[in-house]
Amino acid sequence: MPDAPSATNKKASKPGKADTKMKAAKSPERGHTAPVEISSAHAASWPNPQEFAEYGVDLMQRQILFFDTLRQRANIMLAHERDGMPPVLKFKYELVADAATFEPASNYQLLNILEVGDICLDECLDPEKPPVIIIDPRAGHGPGIGGFKTDSEVGIALHEGYPVYFVVFTPDPLPGQTLADVMASLRQFVEIVRKRHDGRAPVLYGNCQGGWAAALLAADCEGLAGPVVMNGSPLAYWAGEPGTNPMRLAAGFLGGAWLNHLLSDLGNGRFDGAWLVQNFENLKPEGAIFRKYADLFESVDTSAERFLDFERWWGGYYRLSREEILAIVENLFIGNRLEQGLVKLGPHCEIDLKRIRNPLVIFASYGDNITPPHQALGWIPAVYKTTKELVAADQRIVYLINQHAGHLGIFVSASVARLEHRAILERLSEVEALEPGLYEMRIDNPTGDPDCGHDQYTVRFEPRRVEDLVFNTQPDAFERVGRLSSRLEAAYATFASPWVRAWSNPVTAEVLKWSHPMRVTRYMFSERFNPAMAMAAAFAPMVRAHRKQPGEENRFRKAETTSVDWVETGLTRMRESRDAAAEQAFSWLYDWPGLRGSSDGEAGKR
Image 1 (tube, rainbow, N blue to C red):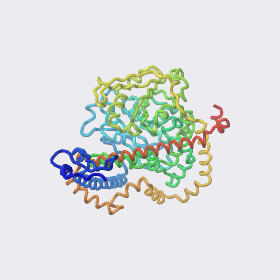
Image 2: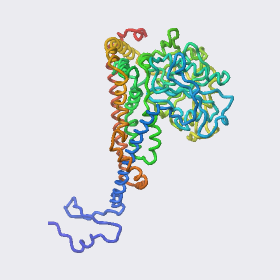
Image 3: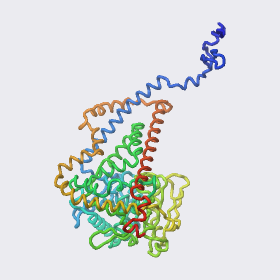
Image 4: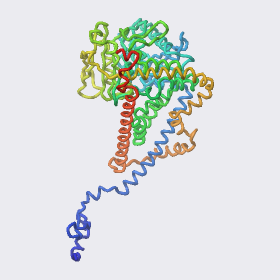
């Protein structure tokens, strides 16, 4: 039997004032109990009750503030709707022209930016610079994101001395409004601005949908002078690659344009932009859905105001007419007819991108999974087969690539506005003076500071070859999707649409509008719809007055942050698997080898 510990050993094992504690442990060889040393530093690494209590109070307080922020968002959304959802511009402006009075009419308006806060623009405008017309995207949201804050496209353009005009639109289209009506309104806006500035051709500065609208305007049969800047704007709708922009595959799984037609019929002739915003969120749910709310919960004390400002724009859903959404989907996103010169604006005018004589600046980002460089630049080799052909057309195309900015970041990020957009606006005269050809705009900023001085960064235009712009398009597969879409749309329009229209009316359209998940998940936190939220409104002021935050080294708070990162990583992996499966399924359905040799139509001829 093993010897029992002596009285001397027992006494020695008791903890004293020394910096070491003793713990009994079995000897692996003989089964004896042996002392194990535990340092005081190791013992201190265990969470203590005070840390847990501090974290518990902080967690409870953040929950109250988090739900109160969601309550405020719901009330802001409802108030914004009651006010007619005006633009979210941070700048003072005046209405210059309302296209509702034009012939043909549309729901577009032209604003002139007057002041930045209390600063009168007359003090900073440069009379030698042409006016800039900024066209915000009409893709589900309302206008104003290009001037959402001081450090924005509007703010930078004003800082550089340009007179700035802003194109906005009202929440609802006019009955029967068409894409041709919108283009006619934009052309009249350009003419109005020219007259206000002694015939000087304005710079068109388009964001996303506003960019391709500017391209349509520049390429229409009447022509247009002045540089065109397109930020995150798709012109090659089939271009892409696995893992880049899975949204281009959606028509292959949903059957094409008929679904947009159905939703427009259910909306009594109007397509609800909330569907487009929902698509954006589902495209990258780990960021647009999970991380957005996780960040708010983690730093609700400092980020609530910024969250509410952004959500006022993000939660304001505008509508398009049935005629507009069908023309956009059939001609652009499914048909890809723009780069082929097959888009018609009116009975006697086909849009041909070769007609553009304006210098073009294309700003895209590899961090943009809605309009990656593939879709922003892929039209160039489709329209101009070679560099020689581009030069012969006397055209200048400059592109600028950001490596990380997301889609919204291209025209919302303050750091992007202070560097890339500032550089574009500063160098527009140099772009116009370039020899015809293709160039990449490179910005060298050794400091990494977007607020660096003019002498701390340099811009150069490096010649590029059209032949080197090679992007995957899968034309055969997408043409099959286009033919499927045309057949299903014809069947729906003939057999189902008349019945849906007969059933639909303003009341049913309004019920469906307020039943949309994108609205329900917001207004459900208003005390007007959820009386329980009144508790958050009552407790939030008390919490703010007696806010208790744990120390930066609180291990429970660190564990929370780590857990959030793990969840985000897991959601990212799931989204990547979903996108990879969609790419594979699309290839199986529309691009499998047996179909390639038997393709009819233009794809087979190529």
